Length: 374
Image (tube, rainbow, N blue to C red; front, side):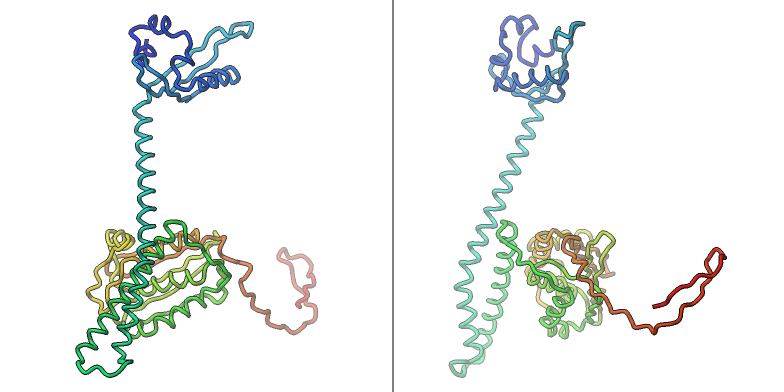
């Protein structure tokens, strides 16, 4: 009776009288019925089989069916028995979710491709603005009589560079998100990359009045990664730590290799810290956390987005651990596959003068045995 109702028939008799070919009359794709029966005969039982069928009124619905073969004493098939459920609503909901996901992916890719194209188009005229404003502010073509014009040129130059930085970061994110960013991998030591970053940021560190310590173990293994991309990660994270740390505060860069083989790289500051909501905001593209205490200019809000994208591109993981008023730890976790344990430097053994064989008593109190110290 239930099957007849699902298929739109008043009684089971109506169903049996009007349907003589189940595969041809009920199934939208008759071959699915043939495959179902073949599997049922071969295995004796089928569970969770889904099929699209036609109701009496022509409407298409989805059914889920479980069935088993009932045989007689001779092993011949007597009949099939099982159960059928109408799962149309669930299938429609799944299809709607799948369609929405596809549309979201298309929208995201289209947006990123648009940003990438626009970034290229904007850079050309912007470079001209920056170049000419630099010539004016530096008075390359002669002294400027009205000093305020020189100040205006400086403002144009600074604003142009700031805009160029935003465009470059948008382009970097869009390349990663659209899958157009390829890694130029090589073996390198983390200390080398961090030292290069410190050289770049020396003036910024002095201006902020923050102490930055590099506490990397000498026996830290090499990384198989993109050195330029890793420098970009370190510049953003160390720069953020400096920005959010008041004058007189401390920033530490540490690293360790865990038992799993992963490398943990931590940038730890004693700054203002963040709440859970602020961390979520900081990880959002263009998301900015209040930096009014700092004398430095606000960032573009894309730094951590780039960090997270680059780390993910390396197959790693990025975490922020923070507590308001207690400081922040930005952690980059590199997978074991990128940590070259074979590259760990081995310190040469200190020479030991040869000695005569010495007698040593065993732990169980047996007769002494000889131990040669080389």
